[in-house]
Length: 330
Image 1 (cartoon, rainbow, N blue to C red):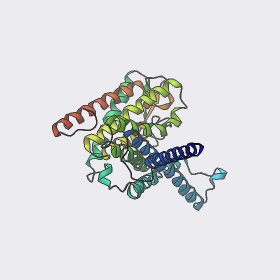
Image 2 (cartoon, helix red, strand yellow):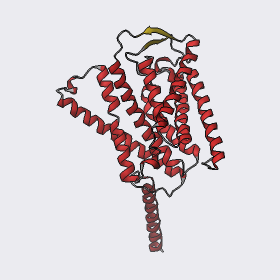
Image 3 (cartoon, rainbow, N blue to C red):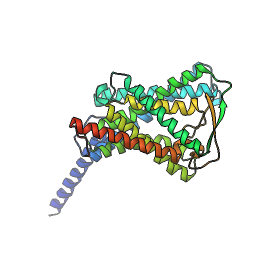
Image 4 (cartoon, rainbow, N blue to C red):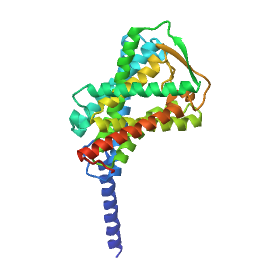
């Protein structure tokens, strides 16, 4: 009888170990298995994002440090380039994240570019850029009415070459973040799980990298900032659905950051703007202007973005009904 009990315990332990092994294999980001419950698939994509994002950042930092040393700059002794050059290095360095995410899709997921929402036509990028420009104009104009943001004239030391380089840098940054959040997570989930799960997962990975600077603000600004991030992430997801491409999201992302930082000179996700076309300043720190984090933690910006998200969702569903295509929720 004791022998039977021992055998039963051994069998149970083996089954348990087998279940754990199967579970880990399912959620491992190093295979292209997708036949699993929606929750597990979402976790798998979150892990894939973490792998590509962290791995890409580490690789980029290694390459940049090597380039610094080759240029005679010893970063360990505080030898750096100017602030403008360092910002450009940071922005263009995100091209490494694009390369890592593309390699991941090619080697692990074995997916082609059209399958990750990268259409051949570039027109979608300009559509997104136009929408981003409109959203910035409406948001900033509405905040200016409250008197919590004021223009302070045009910049006297504007550098056109630097502005063009910054535009290119923000284009790389926008593409990198959208390739990861919308391409890697959202586009690979939207046809396999419910739409709320796909949008929620892509929103989570979009918010996480912003939390470092956002947490430097007062708690009330953290809450409003997260709400704004959720709203704009939904916009990125819905415009990707509507255009069937991440290019529109890339264009919107790029122009939003570029205008905010290089045209208006306002804080971008908690980072102080540099030399810009127009010198604008915030008056006080409150929920109308977003405090030191910038208008991306403003209640007014959040209202504008939420309205835009609902409008894009309505446009998508109307087109969805016409086409007879159904994704997730009705």
